[in-house]
Image: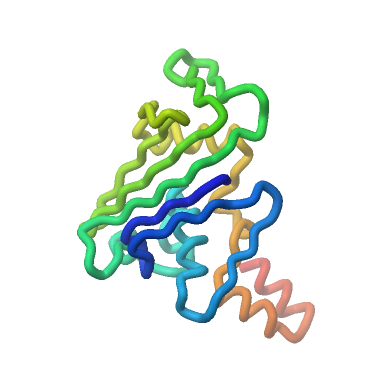
Length: 170
């Protein structure tokens, strides 16, 4: 992931974060929006709101004074070959980057745009996004992906092997 851009998402009016290609550390004081960046990342690529541990519905993610929120994620393709499907509708050449944009309305409605690096819209279907993410080996709803603050605290406070097991089993 090369970049994430947030407009009116949770506590962020406008924020762009450029990521390093190997490792990234997001730090800051409590309440400054670190977790909001991770939430935006997972929501942009189709994660269900409840799985983020931050809200129950998409509408809860729209900034307090906005009608809509926009999250854009730029993904650098890991492989030399562009994404190619077997079906002609899926025979897309994104170039070096895939841009995913999700617009969330205050009503809770949302829409996806999947774009090439020159911002040409290739699809607006979530199913197509899931195919691309699968091709890139992104497992969005995998519980190992991002640990919420509440779950991290629970894990760190677990005193026994049984409580560790119970935590991961859940």
